[in-house]
Length: 80
Image 1 (cartoon, one colour):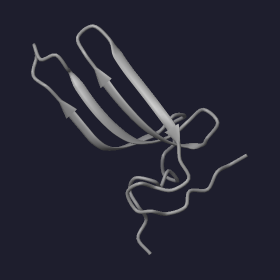
Image 2 (cartoon, rainbow, N blue to C red):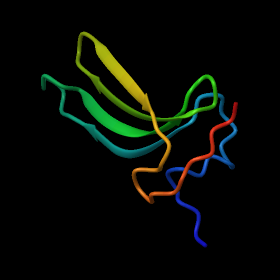
Image 3 (cartoon, rainbow, N blue to C red):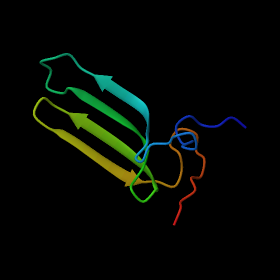
Image 4 (cartoon, rainbow, N blue to C red):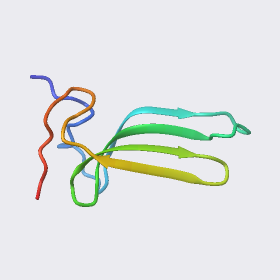
């Protein structure tokens, strides 16, 4: 079985890893500088679907805990 590149965090050694499935950078002078989304492990090591947007003056990020990978449908293990 092939490992999903979005929900397989085994090889990631960072504390707060993110596997981006969408990320767009915009030209200088645009209202939005960057926007994206991806799977993350939060501070409690729980799988999260995160989205972010940044402008020249501010940035915003939000995440939701998830139980299944939105890309491959695999049930994600949750550590307690």
